[in-house]
Length: 303
Image (cartoon, rainbow, N blue to C red; front, side, top):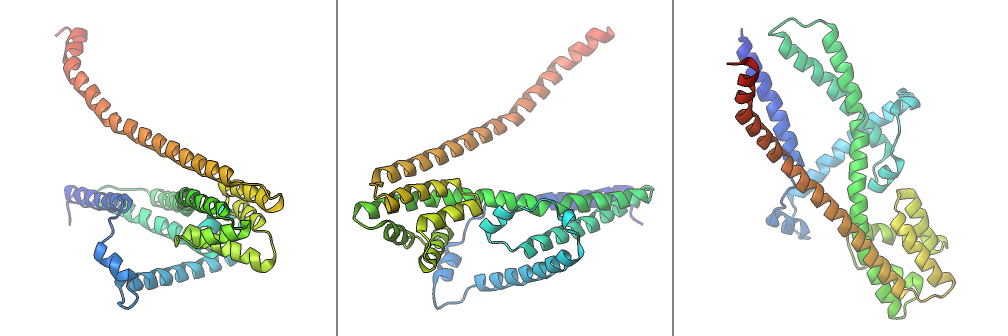
């Protein structure tokens, strides 16, 4: 029978391992140059294929679980669904619902396990694990929504960075005499990131459907919540419908995008710098308490 100290040590080890794994998950990964070159090789298979297949299988299982949940769980219990974020991430609604169900089940299963570990040392009423399981399930239910919003925020930042480069390319194409549609399509052919692929898809769809490309980009900005793309669409509408010379306007808009991103990054850096000073301030406070504490104690006690 393990002693109370051993149980506490085991519990602390389990909790510390979980915190360490979460910290490792948040640390930015450094890509392996050899694996990256292997993935870019058209003839040699890489380990990334197995990883992609595993992710596809996991997404398929999550999608099936979400499809079942959409049939069983009432609509009002799902809460607010971030539709724009999911469309930006191209994450199916069934996968999102499956993640919510899976996270809730994990939370409901983990809380009773932790309570059971502590119950080996002292008696715990039955209501405690029940309430802990329900609370953990409800808390984990909202984690996929938070993750989707955070991932979409990072995706929008990446979109704006690529959008500034695309606007510069469109301006250069317009300056060389290309038409509005031709300038946008040629500029979208240059990059291979997901942003340029998304722009190519939307412009190609507008060509085959007979829709004006600026209207297609305007609809895309409303669908994904990208106001910067709507501004570019308005500028190109002036070039297409009124024949305006928009080279200077495009370059100015691209500069404004980069300035806005630079201001945002500067604000983040300042916030991180201020956050770094907090532990130092706490250490100074503790040191002052250690120095002044005994004197104050003797003053009030008369010792």
